Image 1 (cartoon, rainbow, N blue to C red):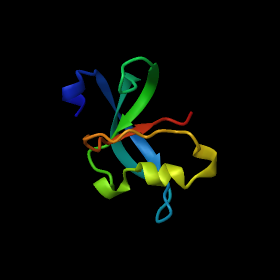
Image 2 (image 1 turned 180 degrees about the horizontal axis):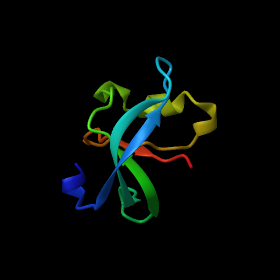
Image 3 (image 1 turned 90 degrees about the horizontal axis):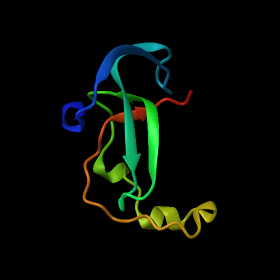
Image 4 (image 1 turned 180 degrees about the vertical axis):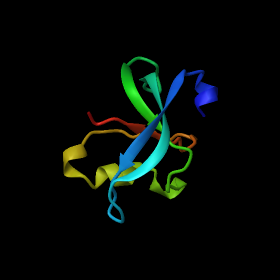
Length: 94
């Protein structure tokens, strides 16, 4: 996927903690990206995005409008339906 984006990346090692394990070292790539909404009007820079070759996610994990509608704090948010791939990007919380 990084090749498809034409992004320049650096190799790095992440220390991951999950519900099952703590401080597991994992190889990753880090890139800087600029992303926009589906209409191309709102753009945001993501200076540190980590790419993993594998994540345990499935198409069924993608939220749908009925998921958003169940959240009272998400009232009025329209989640457009897209035919998109799941891409393995993680945003740095720092």
